[in-house]
Amino acid sequence: MLMPEDPQKLQEENRKKIGDNLRGAYSIIERLVQKSYQQKEMDLNFQLRNVRSEISGFFSEVENKNLEKLVGRKGSLEDFYASEDMLLKSSSQMLDFANSCLSSDRIDIVSLESYLKRFEQSTKARVIIDKNILKEFKLKKMEYDSGLKVELDENPLDDRYAVGNEFDPAEVKTQDLSCDDNSSIPPSLSNDNGELGSEMDTETLSELYNYLNILEHKYSSYQPEVSYDGSYVGNGKWSFDVSDRSIFAEIREGIFKTPLTFETFWHPFGDLKSLIQFVQQEANLVSKGQYKSLCIVNSDWPFDIKEWATGYMHPRMILFLYELDSGNLYFNESLPSSAVLSTWHSSAEKAQTLEDDLMSLANDMEYFEASDLMERSGLNLKSAKEYLKKMVKMNRVVDIGFGSSKYALAKE
Image (cartoon, rainbow, N blue to C red; front, side, top):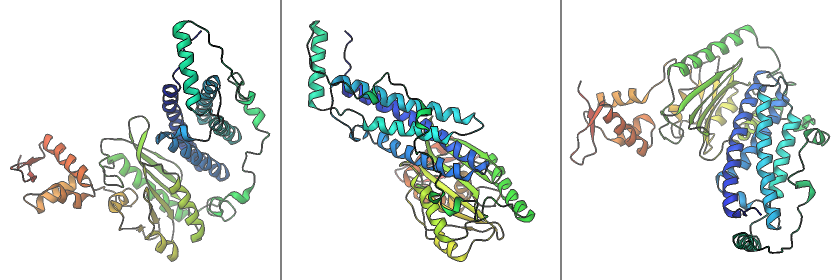
């Protein structure tokens, strides 16, 4: 007889493993979204964004430690073990299949949606930990410890979720899981309106490439240091990827945490409604604790779209509209750190660094405080204080002390 596992401890361990699998799957789907966009497969791009959105929703549950509050059912202790095993297995299968799509010439969206559906079904088939489960575990533990056999009435798990019942994606392909109904695809992602599918004239194409080349050069030479909420992200790993008509970049902290992402791409929306729907969909995909800087490029933006963009607000995403003809960038300038983030979408070749801000501040003021750096740089007060401590250690500034919390430029 095997020693029974503590249900609460097992569920917490599984929660962490499932969270890791979901983070991995989300990251891969993000790359597949970029891949489908580069290949101009807009129907597939839309479907992948939906998959990404659903994974993001599950991930939020896991991150908030609310997985145990998902819809479940009553059952025996053995039912509980089997359902937890299936839930963990389905998240691993989804991650493995998503990973296989990266190296494949064709992204099998139907099978990918099937794996996601399997994971969703596994969450609904979970067995809730209640007093009966805990009582049964206690009896099983006593039985194991004493070597006595305690006869218990066990209800078998539904065959659909039995541990030995392997999942065959081919069986699910016959289900109506694909997005063949083009009516569900926003006009902004369709080729019918000539926005993405049509060829650009030579002048426009040249302007777009020049703009993306400037961003690539900037991203190669500088790294973002201030996030949307004013926190310092200069220690994170900075990476970017340039495609035919877009550039994607991100700051990573550790393996899974991505506090800030940047996305700039050509998409000349012709009407405000399509743009609003698209932007809000993108904003809804940004998870709690993360921020996104989104820039959409057009040759010449209509007045009503520019007016709307300059008033757009979202707690985790800032919107920029870049206009090739004028070189102007339109955004809500009242948002925190909006000017700082705009650097990463503007056609200015040089980025303003925190050290530039610090030197400028030192030249303007003989002595300065963290609050002065906060106003000058876009950092929040906590991050400004931490950054100044870092600069003191590097002997760039000195803390003049005496309880004043003031700093001065270090003399060489």
